[in-house]
Image 1 (cartoon, rainbow, N blue to C red):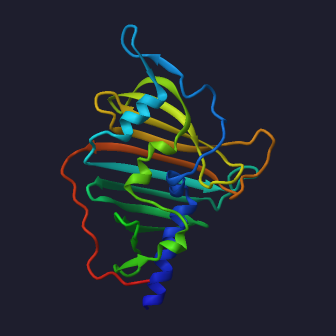
Image 2: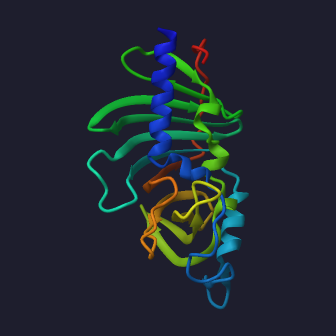
Image 3: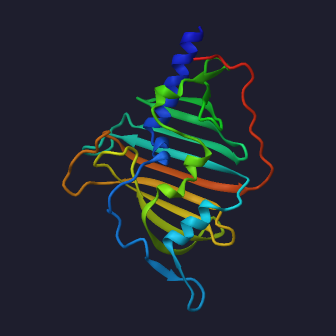
Amino acid sequence: MHSYLSRMAALVAGIIMMSGFSALAACSLGNTATGTTGTSVPATGTVTVSAQAILDQAEHAALKDTSFTIAASAGGASGPVPSNVATVNGQGALTTSPHRTKIHFSAIGLFGISAPADVIIDEHQNVYAQVPPLNQWVKVDPSQLQVQLGTLEILNYNQVHNPVVIGAETVNGQQTWHVQGVNLAQSAGTAHRLEDVWVRRSDFYPVQIQIHTVPDPKGTPTTDNRVLNVMLQFQQWDTGITIDLPNNPIAP
């Protein structure tokens, strides 16, 4: 039974990776975004703000915790997205001290089958999953996932390369700076992925993050054969969230 639960938990974590959540821990890519790092737009009067300055401020924002929704999908790189696309939808929270993330996936879909799951990632990058049919937490071996996740990776603006300022926009009632840069889920590949970041102008807290695959103009399939679309929308900030680790999880 322990072996079964471990395999199920690893499968759930794998689907989450396949569905694009791993893109949040992306590596660098060459210059495929328009504009340059120095691109700026007027802020107030004659004052201008640069994309890199916005990201630097966001990287060092005094965020303590936040809640968010996540929606992601992944499909084949050639032609239309197939019917067996992997999808995840859920609600989550993260804290920065300690660095922990917890997500309740209301639906994780693959090959037409959908199931709920809960996932916790701790400050040491350990992954815990709770999946049907039994409500037992299982600790997943991180080496099986071959990717790092967690609070720092979700909000790691250092991984946004060649950023440009799209403009000042209102998102869900929040006044934000919209910055777009390049992200890549793996260090070597042809998948062109853009990351759009919306941070609140008052304190540079996250408001929205989107990662999506940009079609290769030459028609070359992505190295990992995935078309990704990931959307994170942040809803509340610094409300005193705590994330407790599971008691006595089943070891991998």
